[in-house]
Length: 272
Image (cartoon, rainbow, N blue to C red; front, side):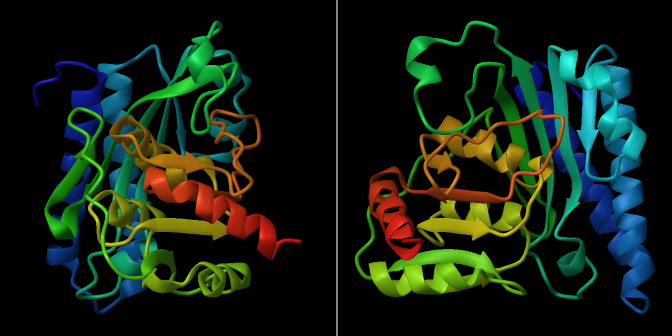
């Protein structure tokens, strides 16, 4: 593995973790999907944690698969650099044969005591304490890794109805009302990373979610989305803030930049 910078590191280890997950899937098969999902979570986490410990030993890590003590470690709150990882985003889909809508997330948050004035007021990932500076989303079963090293360009405007990615198992009811209001179709997709990747690659125009997520569910895809010039915010338009003591981040909107005002206005109307 050749490590040039943080962007390349995120890309390389997310991709390699994805390759390990594909190999595990092939080796173990799908006779016991629960065991396969559990093994995938653990194996990918172990690889990513070891890689970051070896290659960035002074940085902290916030992982979905970390222990409670690791998540609450007060040193993370004072660290200048924190890697936010989801070793297997879409564990349910990973255990289902034939599904490709699961991902590996690797993002780097970095403290910025004095953010640039234009950043501090913009929606997205910037706040008074830190910013996502690098990230990668590997979609191993699709053979794709989206990365801040070479972020995708927003697709050209598309004719026809807007498409909004939603959870295939628990789409929020308000999104159905939003879709009716703005004239959109709902597209069920598995993991959060796969949903945001679908926005970045032009399969849908937006992803709207509310009702429960954590920082590791969105940090890496949001890092790529922001680097590529897409809109990413809370559903009220406020910034997505990362590396908090409580890693809950319950709602999110990622969309083509030109559609964000329409969607935010629609969300406000639905919640009146």
